[in-house]
Image (cartoon, rainbow, N blue to C red; front, side):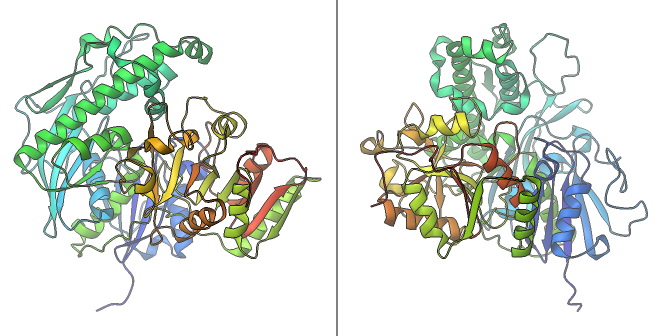
Length: 580
């Protein structure tokens, strides 16, 4: 038997494109295209992400055993060497190519990374593959009204075990191809939960890509003013109530218009959030009614709705819930890679360790090269830096002194959340720090909340349910006795999108939280992504230094280098909490 490693490359060609490289069934590298191109939600051509993964592994395309890809609407027509431009492969590339349908890739992304040996898989998003391009129809129950033609996936349900992944139920919706100028109708699909949420994002924020903001806006609103539901829930299916859309006749004309009518738009966001939660809970209950398993894996863009996820745990028979951390289309590449390993090559599952920081780890030489290049590009720059003898001690003391720091460690997170490798951090008790970071560092809307990061063993001390939430896509509630102290990381309704940190998944960030607690007495840090509005999360040390220099961050820590501005002032400091 050959000892040659088996490399499988998965790549997603939808929006939020990405690539993932497996070596003998384990992820060794994965990256989203936006981190490299520096364009939010970038997708399509995969040359950048494929090169990144291969270069990091030190291999070429000729070392690959298999390439698996996924894209909407084009499964059987994609060429090896071209897709929205030249790809990283040649037309005569000898590597076997496989293309799979959209929900199947989502499902395998959850199966491959989940901690379960068996269970159910649910995929809910805005729009998947057309009916005629689906690879997972055999054996699935389909609604009788589904016909071939212009219908696309909206939710899919599966069972998986060591014997494989098997479709149980798939629902579809008509594609909406008759959009008229000035109309606010459903994008792409007529009756999908994800499509409705994107439509509300367009109505309020002017585009469909800001749907994630709706969760932050909704708690400021009052959904009770809208008695009608956005959805009709019947026969185990979800349909958009098109009559309800007629009330959406006053879209935001500009950001100033949004601010002037803030209460109205908050009410609409609350309405949408309420009805999305009800629809998700309904689907979960309906699917489990006849095909129950206590373990549920969950993927698709709707799985990023942290409030709905908490309701799944509280209100459905699910006992163990795993949300794929990169649940949206950025996770397709991971699903493609695992499909190749498990289904095409028929290899045994290799248990994923739960880590989601899958980007390349920059070497000491690469970090120093970026530092030198940054200094050369900014003559006369007023910053100082030194290597810390104990970076956890130094960072903890800066945080306890009220400073806001950029935190750059290891490989970048894969997915939308900064989880302690590309983060901006602050003492969660510091009065006014939320407004300061939103205004002077993130340059974003003031209603946007921040996440509390806490160790797994401390979460029950501070939060009502004490959920395990390593990927920051599950909402908990602060205990009443801590509500005032930690108001900077708690939303107006007392909720928080918590991140629980463990030593086995992120030992460095875990060590920082433990050291900060020893220094300050507090077990919670404010954690937000290392970027500003409209910018992908930083990928390189150079990008981290650039954002540090152009904002009012007080310091940035890159591995064990600590950078500070030469000016003596501290941009933000809480008078209440100083280093003991």
